Amino acid sequence: MHDISDIKIIIKPIAIQYELKKVFLFGSYAKGNATPNSDIDLLIEKGKPLSLLKLAGLRQTFQDNLNLPVDLITTSGIDQDFLNEIHGTEVLLYEA
Image (cartoon, rainbow, N blue to C red; front, side, top):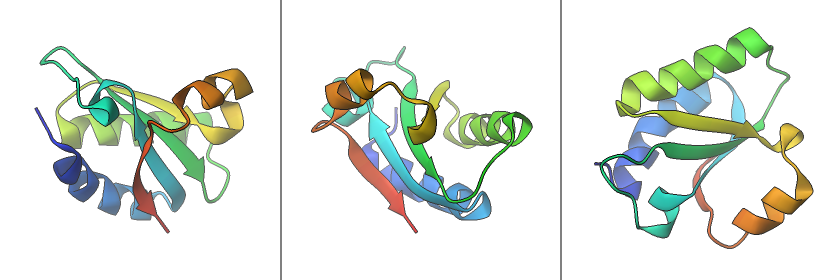
């Protein structure tokens, strides 16, 4: 299992490569209660529009580098109620 500092190190070059503005960690890893079966939940703020194909590639790149399943959500595609739910527990991993 990764800790948050490991995840930050792994995420940074990928975020730069895909020109992301911000990457947040939320869910069990952010709350500190991840188990060996946990996935990594990431919320991204895109710097430039990304096609669905690029988003799929981004998710796969995160998974390949983290060696864990990744749930990837964009700030433009998130429900406000869900955003409110994770607010306060999210961890900023990267900011351009």
